[in-house]
Amino acid sequence: MKCKICRSNSNKIFNAIIINKYKIDYFKCDNCGFLQVEEPYWLEEAYKSPINDSDTGLLERNIYLSRKVSVILYFLFKKDGNYLDYGGGYGIFTRLMRDILGLIFIIMILTHKIYSLKVLSMIFKLRLMQ
Image 1 (cartoon, rainbow, N blue to C red):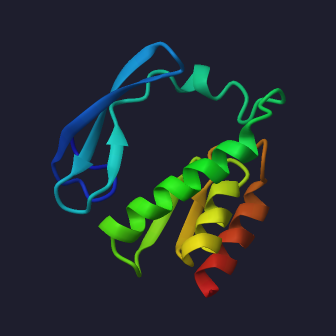
Image 2 (tube, rainbow, N blue to C red; image 1 turned 135 degrees about the vertical axis):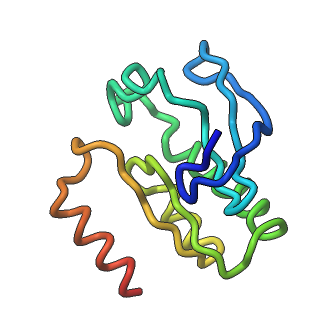
């Protein structure tokens, strides 16, 4: 599989079950380290609603995962790196990562239901100026 960022070769490194039913493969780019999944045939089902109203564990899950990911990033990746939160929802995880490690995360929001394009462009301009 070719990397979606730099078009170099990517190798399968693991698989996982998503939406409690689809076994998907994850690939890591040999050149830039980008982690991606196989062609996402499940997206329509996964994004019926960006964040479900009944998701009462949203904040707890983001706090829990930000602590885990911050340890991984701190010990295994560049301290001064820039990171992309692709499909970042409301940006909670991104904000937590910035607060914990001072890392620059750029939020890539996949749905217009959360932000309009005008607001997105303002967010990216602000992040680029920081």
